[in-house]
Image (tube, rainbow, N blue to C red; front, side, top):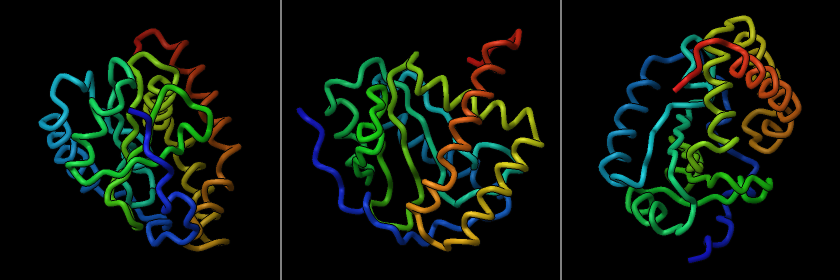
Length: 194
């Protein structure tokens, strides 16, 4: 089966979740609960489920959206994971495909803004999987980098409150640089994640 068409909410600018909150311990609890639901729904399809993104970094201010990453053996057939995810209330958002990332698919829950979860389904061993884990671990190990990232996010939200697209565009080049630093760090350190 081919991926469904782009969900209309992908183009919406206004998003009440585009606000930066102080670090919250409940984000880790929300991840654990949702990860348990995903494990039950996906079974052996999921090789691993990780908490990624800003809410996965203790002490990092963030939007109140928990990012999860599910690594799978292959992205096709799409229905192997998309069907169970739909039954859990996730909607497919082809943001990764639109950006040219053939190693991942993006889902969100609930379908409308504000969202509680973003779910990245990626091919196990892919650059997408490695990048998300490297950034998470790098920010955990470098509080100064986490502080700089939080300052950027706060500034973007202060200039364009609740504007999801402006927020995404405003941090894009910073995130690319952050990913490069994180990948270099992850590949050079003696003990590797995983």
